[in-house]
Image 1 (spheres, rainbow, N blue to C red):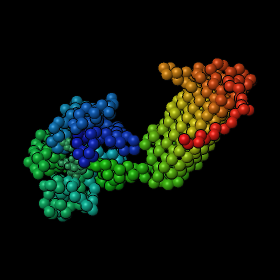
Image 2: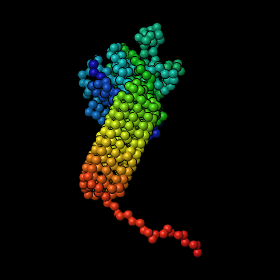
Image 3: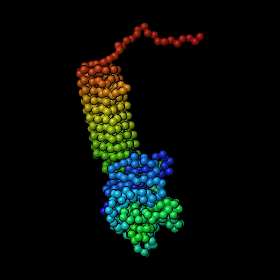
Image 4: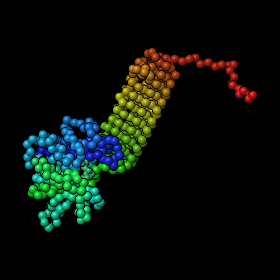
Length: 473
Ligand code: UD1
Ligand code: CA
């Protein structure tokens, strides 16, 4: 069997009230279409064709891949018309169509469908060598296409229901048809060899003057091709997004699923309703995460890592036993074992901390390596620096890494002590065990094991008197 996947993503999404194409709006930090493409890829299809239109080239420009083909639909004349635009690409992908070749139609604005549900749909199509529709039963089916079956008593499907004979859209349905609660999710597996013939016969003689993909169901029945259905494990897998409200609802649902999976693996979450994972979060044993944390990109937390409330971590690896206190922001960094970060720490890209490093409140570290046991506990900027082991960086220390044009590095060797409120003007080196007196501006190398300081002499003016207020004239 060869499986091809057609993703419909040409629609406008008027109700998003946005200048951006609907399928590029993010869910869990990724475009809606990105989620659908990921799921499509997990089925290992021979090809994936994305039908785009509204928003012009922004969609193919935003999401590309060697395994993705794009077909443009302009104007957008309905779901059947959309699949028609994919046909030439499909034919190129599978030049020799056999009866066991299927095309799976997905929607670019339905992001949470699980691969297992799609597999069972494709298997249902294969089993009857015909067309299979993913359907759900909804207490309120308003707006959806209804699955019309022949009366029970005639041929029945495996669930004892009548055979599917056609799909009728809400706007074309009679009152009796509108009472049907089984609806078309829009996701179908179609024998590819039949597709062109059916699409050619579509007409737009209906309430919306559109070419409905759903009309191929009655054609299949007329041609003696078996039509069957499959159901997803959860209704939410088939929910589409038409508005910001629906986007926010699916985001919460998705986050809840992620939180459940983390709890299931033994991760401690203070509140599963207050965590956002926008990427991949992998945790060791006995990790605990307080409320309102955001994890973006790839985040890996070692055993016993504790993340305090209101932290943002993006593309970070943290080794075992480290504590990140409240309100810390860490991006593109590697944090060693048993470190203590925050509260209110900012760790920027290119930073590597060895074990037992302390980075305290209002300390910013950028593109720096800091050796084991070193500390910068309060109010400091460490940028473009190489810091050795057991270094003490006092409160208010600043590495002046930028001369307005170029960036330069600061090197602070093992065991050095940099007194509070010192500025280290890079490029500059503080040798091992050097002491820098508080308030110094260091522009040349500070030798090992000695006290270096730059400081105006302290004087006291004995004759000084406090100012006196002048009388008013
Ligand atoms: C469609 C189905 C309906 C089903 C419902 C599920 C048809 C005729 N109707 O209705 O049976 O219950 O989905 O949500 O198929 N699209 C294009 N080009 C177009 C039109 C649509 O790419 O010209 C894309 C949209 O971007 C969207 C998908 O196809 O991703 C569905 O379009 P939409 O307008 O939402 O279909 P409905 O009318 O809701
Ligand atoms: Ca829709």
